[in-house]
Length: 382
Picture 1 (cartoon, helix red, strand yellow):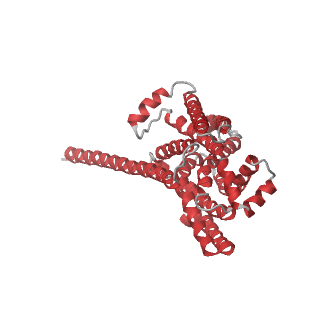
Picture 2 (picture 1 turned 135 degrees about the horizontal axis):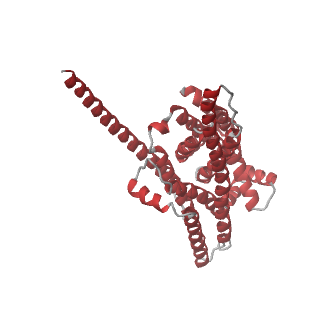
Picture 3 (picture 1 turned 90 degrees about the vertical axis):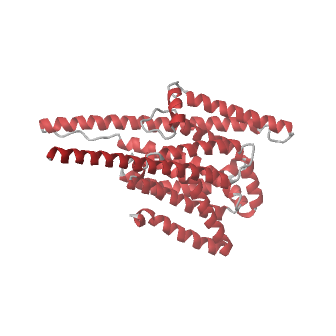
């Protein structure tokens, strides 16, 4: 099971590390290995959230996620995306941007760093909406009840998550503009870019999330109808009609997963520049990490881990909220990537530990109930 799920990740790791040695020797090997670990540590929460969505999809779409989705994640977000950023921000052609990335790495890194506020605003708003929509929803299972209960009540207010996100964006862009003006920097004009990018992230979430939610609701309605038709078929002996909307629902859920992965990858791509400004090594290291994140997602689904450890999804969404805040803060201030990675690991580790304790308590309570029943049977038998 482990080899079947992680087989491609192991193979890509071997190929990627070998390519690194051929490209730049053992120093490149070390850089790629470090980048892989960085990507996995920063994106573990991504795997948990992805698993919550992927478990609703059939085996075919899970395979698409591991094949086509990997191509989008590795080549699209880890290789093409940084080049596109430079091309747009520097107003140059894609071929010129690739040439710059390969032959003038310092200038390339400077341009990507210059585009960071817009990237962070887009990704930060997208992730913040995911967190707020999760935390404002009334759930049967609650992890941090003292936080989640009152927030679930507040969540009954329509469009509250959108309002809060816009307020955060306005405060961030205003603070950025004020700071730039006070220090006489050239970033004052970028406050508008931050605002526009943040709104674009919000719109992207609402469109993609709305479409996937719409088709998911349609699928659930069709499944309920199918169940009713099955019962009717048992009574009458007629054949039931097949479901035709599963493909549409799965497609939009897949699209949502890809946009989600893109938002998660922002911090990894930007953080990679703290280690290297070589786009080839960056693509190799982050690509290997992305493979493991995807394999881990499928592993969590097939093992039913989210069902066994019910607070994991909560911890992952809190990590998303923390990452959203960190991205918004990095528009103005620099935050070490180690801190970013540790926040997610600590929150998910805490939620896992809480899940284990919950399972132990439930098992103990069930054991006591079973023991009590056995005593009752013995006494009644006597």
